[in-house]
Length: 125
Image 1 (tube, rainbow, N blue to C red):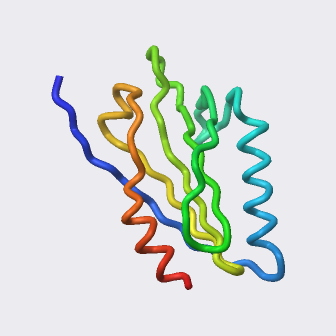
Image 2 (cartoon, rainbow, N blue to C red):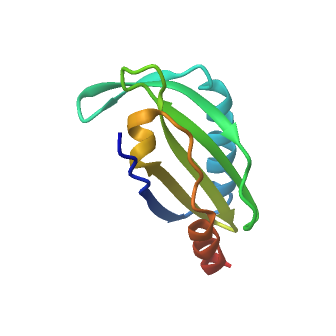
């Protein structure tokens, strides 16, 4: 089998008034714990099963951050991992979602390209 080690990283930057960014990060931290055993969601009218959510090491930089691995059930022995990294800088929240093409097929873990995260977070400050 050929491995395709291609990381795809999506970035969303949102600005919040008042304490909105802090609240959003706190709620995500809570949801990560509550959803550890997985859940079912509907995406574009199709049901999707998240097998597990695992809190991972928070990124450095910014005022605070949180990270998690979301295991998407793709009907194989191992769930396909997707990584989520959030960094708050003041009232701004940067959200990174990362997938790896080979890992989506095999369920193998992969590392988030932190050089991408670090470079974007540096622009927030």
